[in-house]
Image (tube, rainbow, N blue to C red):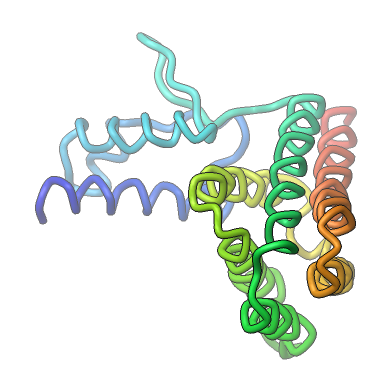
Length: 218
């Protein structure tokens, strides 16, 4: 495997493990153990961990090692305020710039959430469809720079959800919240689209922060 491909593989592998909840808040991640497990030298492992640190998932301390972040409820709420504000900007732009076909595609993706088979794994399916929905929304803003920055925020948000309340906590709300947003975009109401997008993100924040408050009070 080429060096570039090897680094990309290790980064993706570690990110998938974080999304799967294999590493928990505050858990140490051993570079030595990972290099032995994956059959690679320590250098590409450190490169991948450094990239994860830049994205906010882990913290590397010289002479100490690497550990998964362990944010406070206030830090998580601060993150979601920022996250929601950017999502509001994107939704506002989408209301102004999206084509009819793009809005139709957004509605089709949201419909998939209401058609998830009951015998499937709802949380996993929800996350996959939710990623598609918000990527489509971001594309509709026709602002690649803003959308690229927001994608990193989405990954961190998904990680926070995995670590706390889980995706099941939002399954009964998400399709309806998405639909209200779609309606605002369809009406070309950029102000309402921004408000609805922010409210959708902040509802997630409330669940995540509440869960963390309860856990740390025990």
